[in-house]
Image 1 (cartoon, rainbow, N blue to C red):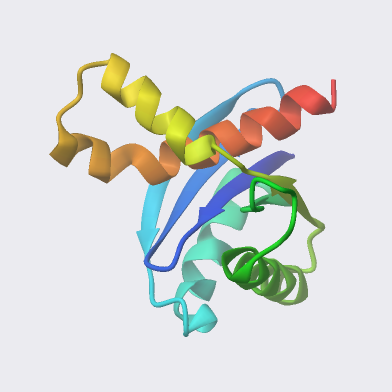
Image 2 (cartoon, rainbow, N blue to C red; image 1 turned 180 degrees about the vertical axis):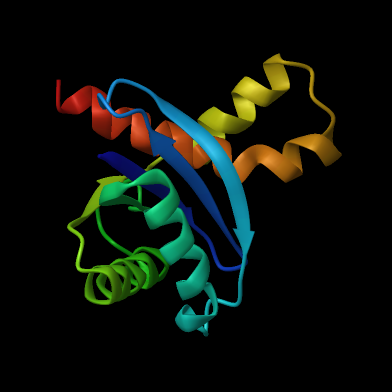
Length: 138
């Protein structure tokens, strides 16, 4: 069984998946959504869960630099609770401070254009979130 990693934003959700042995994370897609309508992505998540045989979901938790949880973090927690309720899978919140910045740095180092970076940044951030979780559980 594999683990799904998510970088949840207001307009997009970056998605990554682990390998079956939980060693590596691969970015797979960016889902565009309306954050006010959780149900708008329910069918897509059901497809992902079935296709990749998902047994757990890791959701990035954007904490403030002082460790507190702000409005964005609370929104992610609400979405994580929704996923847990809808799919009856364990959902883990994972500190995602600086993951988008790290993803941006990797893409800049790869000399990727701004337009191309914009298309992949969310799934790369999801991959970094999931890889951090996987590495911590070794």
